[in-house]
Amino acid sequence: MSVSMYKLSVPVFIRGLNVLAGLLDKAEAHAAEKNIPLHDLFNARLAPDMLPLSGQIQRVSDTSKNAIGRLSDVAAPSFPDEETTFTELRERVAKTIAFLETVKPSDLENSDSRDVNIAFGKVKFNFTGDDYLLKFALPNFFFHVTTAYDILRNQGVAIGKADYFDL
Image 1 (cartoon, rainbow, N blue to C red):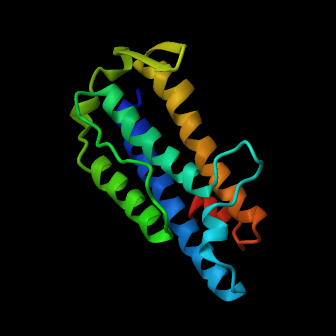
Image 2: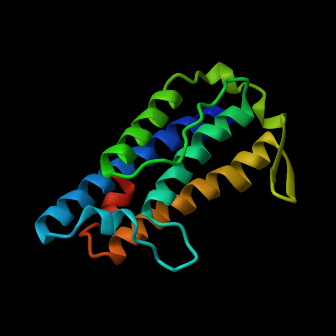
């Protein structure tokens, strides 16, 4: 039995984005309860050279929507990284989910063998679609979801594994 590229991507991305939305809700409630400025959580990071919470959420959004764009002929929307509030982060997550919900399984047919070439400065990667999704896009997506979770845990937000798995 084969698993489609659609099933390996779109529902997985939507689920992870919904987890992030729930984490943001819990972070906001925690800030209100403990009288912590939301700005402190928004800008919290695990290490000085890592992106803050806001940047982690932006990368989750970018990774998911751009993966679909690279694997299909569906144009991924572009969102500038200008969020400055939890409300704006939630809106970005919601816009990303709304985009992903427009993607149909047929949009990703034969994407496993599609050539995907990406570059970050001078570093270039060449993948087949399935290698790109399984070895780059999904690991990158989950790295940033997990890092957002870890930042919030580090800041004292009462979340646990069940929140990550949205159980």
